[in-house]
Amino acid sequence: MRSRNPEPLWRDVVGRELRARRRVRGDTLQDVARRAGVSPQYLSEMERGRKEPSSEMLAAVAGALESSLLDLTAAAAEQLRERARSADTGGEQLQSSFLLAA
Image 1 (tube, rainbow, N blue to C red):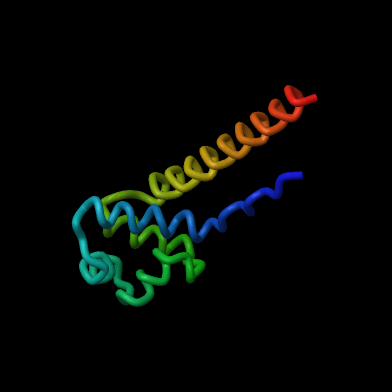
Image 2: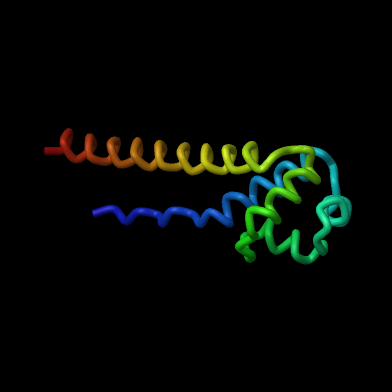
């Protein structure tokens, strides 16, 4: 039986999304942290999935990236959906291989 990869934590997915958005804009941690009213260290920990930020904190950082909490969380949710779809497809392909071998 094939072992499944564990589902990523929400804070990891949101953190990756924050980092991607910051980098696309060409902003530094310091730039975004200053606009959001957080320390660069805290923002870095958010981006690395080390902190479980409140919705208020996420909204502040999203706003500093000229985005919204809705856009940020919708993008993170879509990443989780895509991962689930690809995991389902992988499982179906594996099952089909076993059926063909039988």
